[in-house]
Image (cartoon, helix red, strand yellow):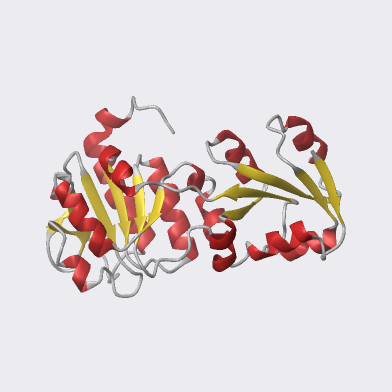
Length: 269
C-alpha cells in the first residue's frame, strides 16, 4: 500500500505529529524511528511496524516499497512536511512508525537472569548508550524507574542504534520492583562511590539485577537501602566519577566476563 501526502492538514500526518511528544506516544501507543539503519532493524525485529514514511525524492524509496512484504503502508511526504516530523540537521529521508510493545513484569522477571534497573537517568544520550550496551551484553530486561527519560524519545532511539527493538523495557517504581526481585531470588546490586566491594572483586550471581543511578546524585537513598550489595568501580586517576553509561558498560562486561561461557551459545533475540 502506497500513499502520497502533501498537506499538513492530512489526519495521518497530524497523528504522526503527536508522536513527537511523550504524551502523544503514550496516547497513540507508537513512536517514530528515523533513518535507514533503524528501519532495517525494525524490519528484522519482532516489533510491529505500523507505517514507513518516506520523504519525496528519497533515493531508496522504490527499494523499500518493493521490499515491503508485510503490506505495511508506505507514505511519501513532500519535503516541507516531512521536515516537521524530524529533529536532525541531516535527515536520511525515512521514518518508521513502530508500536510500543507491552511487557508483563511477572513473566519477564520469571524469565530473566540479568536485569538492569535505571534510577532517574535523565540524559537521552546516556539512556540510549546504556540500552545499546545492555543489548550487546545479554541483558534480559531493563526497568526504568520514575524520573527516567522516555525510552521512545527520538534522541534515545537514535542512540540505541536499534537495540530498543530487541530489549524488553518496562517503566515502573523501583521501590516496588526490588521486593519482587527478592521474592524470585534475584540479587540486587548497585553502584556506590565510596562504599561496598570493588566490582572486579565481586562474583556476580547467575541471577542479578544491577541498579544505576542519576547522573548527578547517583542512586536515590530509598533505593540504595534496598540493595543487597553496593559496588564500587575502581578509579586510579583524578576523576571523581564515571559517566553513568561508562559505569553500565564496566559492570555489564564484568558480569559477561564472569558468565560468558553461559551466554555465548545462547541465541540472539
